[in-house]
Length: 131
Image 1 (tube, rainbow, N blue to C red):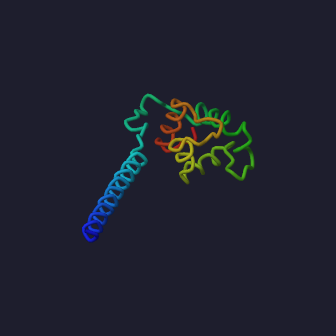
Image 2 (image 1 turned 90 degrees about the vertical axis):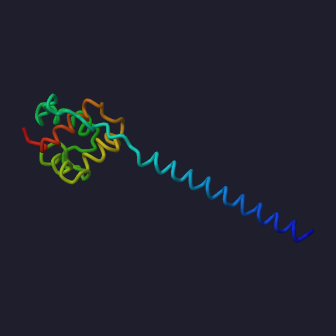
Image 3 (image 1 turned 45 degrees about the horizontal axis):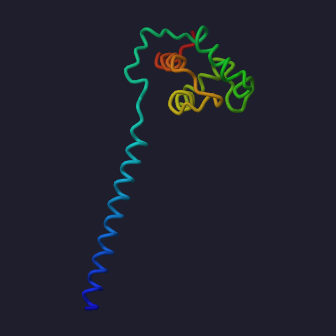
């Protein structure tokens, strides 16, 4: 009788352990899927209708949102975006794309509007010209 009881408990514990493994595996796959399934909001963006120019569009946008807070002003060690060359350095090293377009963590006060981000994206896709 004791031997049957031990076998039953052992099977029960194995069954419970397998259930936990299966549930944890499914949970892991679900969470991984959610994290890796980010929607590319710029996919299919038609830049032919968005003729963003550095002087007319990008520079004022950056001045109002990045320089005015003191973060990326003249001589800033975080990147000086008061000049084309300073902003272009952030374009070339991928920082502008990553922080403003992808993560939307800049500016820290609030993400730029989608229209403003589209201007930046189209300007960068055009080679970020100094125009």
